[in-house]
Image (cartoon, rainbow, N blue to C red; front, side, top):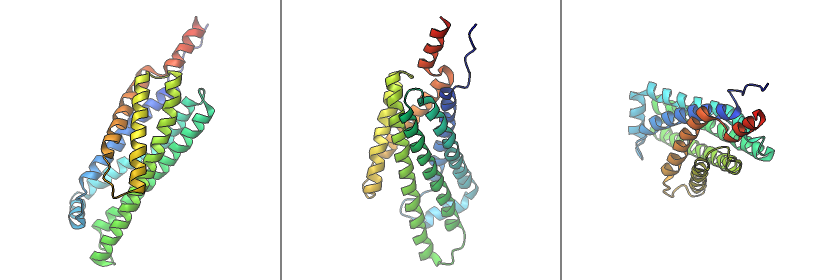
Length: 233
C-alpha cells in the first residue's frame, strides 16, 4: 500500500504564490505608474489628489505583493532544498531581500502620496524637493529589490533546469528574464541617467512567472511525480 501524494507540495504552493504575487504586483505597479506625469510635480500631485483612493488602493495591492513575497521565498526555498541546500539558502536570502526592499518602496510611496496631497510646511519648493528625495529613494529601493529578485530567480531556476523539475523551456525563459532584470537594475543603480528599456525585462519575467505559476498549480513538480511513480512501481 502506497501513501497518497500530498496535494499542496512546495512546488504547487510556489505556483499559487507566484501567481498571486505577480498579479498583485502588476496591478499595483501599473496603476501607480499611470499617475506619474514625468517632469511635472504639480500635475502629478493633481492626479493623485483627484484619485487618491485609487492610488492608495494600488499601493495596497503592491504592499500585498511584497508581504506575500515572504511566503513565496520560503516555499521556493523548500522546493529547491531537495535539489541543493546551498541553492535553497541563496534563493531564500535573495527573495527575502527582495521582499524587504519592496516593502520599503511601498512605505516610501505612501509618504509620497501625503507629500503630494497634503499641505506642506516647507512650501511648494520644499514639497517638490522632498518629492524628488522620496521618489529617488523609492526608485533605488525598487531597483535593489529587482536585483534580489533577479539573483533568486537566476539561482533557483538554474537548479530547476538541471533537475528537469519544469519543462526546460520554462526554466530557460525565467533565467533569460532574470538576466535582463539583473542588467537593467545594475544600470539603473549605477547610471540612473541612462535610459534602460527595463519594461522589456520585467515583461519577460512577469509573463514567465504567470505561465510557470499556472504550470506548477496544475502539474506540480515533474521530478517529484517521477519519484512517486517509481515508488509505486
